[in-house]
Each structure stands twice: as C-alpha cells, then as structure tokens.
Image (cartoon, rainbow, N blue to C red):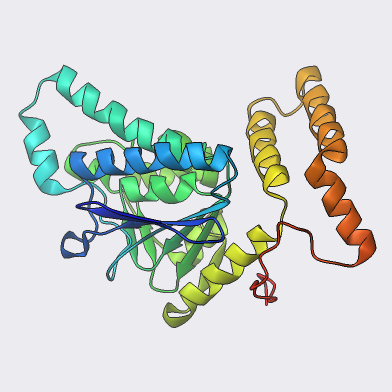
Length: 277
C-alpha cells in the first residue's frame, strides 16, 4: 500500500510496517505548511490503522543527505507578513503534527541520517526509538533567527531534561550525535552504511512483540509519565496487566512460550539479530 504526495511518501508493507518519508531532498527536507498538512493527513490515517492492528510499526525517515533542516525559510518569510491569528493557526497545525506523532498507538522509529535542525529535533523526540548515523547532528536553532523552539519544547525537554533543554534552546549549539545519545535524544549511533540495516533489526524486534501488548504498554507509559506515583496510576497498571493476561494475544504468547514455538503474530521472515548485536 503506497501513498505518494508532493513532499512526502507513505508505504505500508505486508507486515504492517509503515514507512513515512519526508521527500524534499532539494531543500534538505525542510517543512512548510504544505508538508505539515500532508504529514498530518498521513498520521491521522496511521492512527486509525494502528488502532485496528493493521499497522504495527511506523518508521519516520527522509530522502537525501540530511534528515531535515527544520522550517523552510521561504515559508517563514511568508509567515512574517501574516497576522498573529494566522500565525497561531499555523503553529497549531505544527503542534497537531507533533502530538499526532507522539501519540501514535504503535511503536515508532526515527531514522536520522544527517542534520536535524529546529522542528526536526521535535520529530525525533516524538518517536519511541531514534537510530542515527555517525554523521547526524541536532540543533535547536530558532533563537538565532529571533524565534523560539516553542511548539516542540514539551517533547524535546522530555527527551533530554529541563537543564539540558535550557542550554541547547538558549545557545542554539549544535549537538553532535554522541552528545545527543548521551542526553537521551538518540538511542543508537551507527555507521552511515549500516543505518538501514540497524533500523530493520529494530523493526523486526518490535514485530516480535504482541501488537496488543505494544499498544497497551505505550499507552500505559504515557499515563505513568503524567502521574508516576498515584493511586490511580497504580490501579491502572494492575488493570492493564490483568486484562492482557486473559486476552487472546496474552494466551497465545504464553502458550507459544511454553510450547517453544513462535507466536502467531511473528512474521516468518524476521531477522534473528538482536538490536544490540
């Protein structure tokens, strides 16, 4: 299943893996209002398919040398001439994009092959796993041009912490990939030639998990982050595991474990390598 738009591509393979690709390599995949609208449309569709169990993993990537240069400067130049209300509407669309990506029910993997600037750092921070090449670098560059990383700040701050967020949002320093990994924005650093192989390994590992358990776990972790130690959260945790134990997939998973066979949801062509291999 493929959906190719002007600036982005969505392909869903037979395993239920969705490949969402920024496709503006001529401008380093910078995003403007048109690309944001396309991505919102794709993500709304992916939300529905993930809820139905038809999409199990989403991989966010891009074409060309760099992941994304952030906001398209021509778009920003246009927005300067707009009213405050028009700019507010525009910002809300970007906010919707970040929220929609962050709350996708299924696991998400971000593939960063080069530079990720401005809002692109937010895209990475909204994904569950970030695999970056040794050439990747990250920068919250907004203050250099009189702006702020406002819309993406909740997601980036969650990823790297408030103290480090203050430093990098206020200085607009460039983070090399090693620093980004140390701060928690990147999960694995790999060679330029190996990034697709490593992404594939993680995708296969995610496909080993029960689709229902993955969705339930991701939703639960979001709740725990909001209220880590409350009576309601503890009760919610107990409810989640209790329901999974008696669910069809829970029974299948336990049965497969004791029978020493693959569970029904595991694709036959899975790569057996572990993520850390």
